[in-house]
Image (cartoon, rainbow, N blue to C red; front, side, top):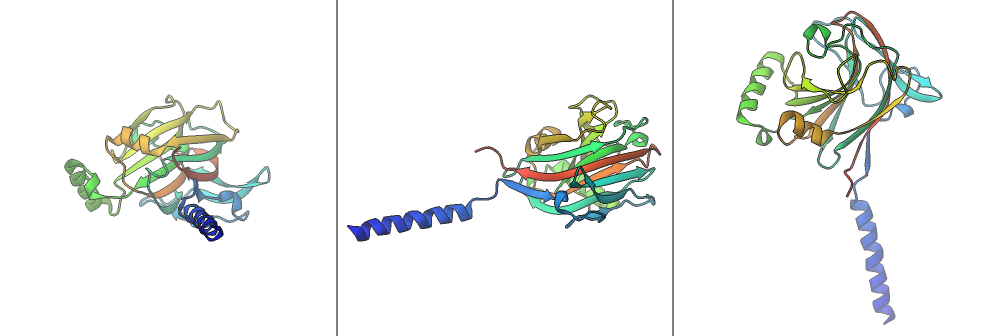
Length: 246
């Protein structure tokens, strides 16, 4: 009898251990800026994202804001971003959370125009090309885009802080339909205040593109003013993906 009880207890302990080991983390950190050393330009795992024909780049540095390390971006008629390669299943981790703060909005920003495609703060999420999840028409457009621009994502969601468009607006990027602009903040009401954001990336992709999302393969932050020739200052806090409620 004692041997049987011991065996049952052993299976129970091992079972709990295996279940605990197999359980994926609820939170998946992709931008732990709060752990970066003050003064550094590139947080661990992040790289500068630049664009052809844009010679003037936004400046990024890790600074302390109320004793917490964050990324400060200063753009003066410039454009560049910070990017990190990731591999995330948006079905497993559909929720993205981040925090940001801006010092000003842009007078000439216009989400519908190429010469107004500038924002004090934006969060990019890019998606990998998975042929079995893409319609034939989109495959042809994607191949044509690669021939012109090289290695590009099959889709991108841009969460932006706009100057005047209503929050909730979703439109094609002024340069390409492969990128969708989603306005999560607008206007100057919350200037100078840290704002916590949360979006369901899985649902946003399905709504914006009308199909199931492939794997997330990159994330980026960007403050840009190369089109409007203005100045913008923004701050970015930690970024994480979160599992859907079970």
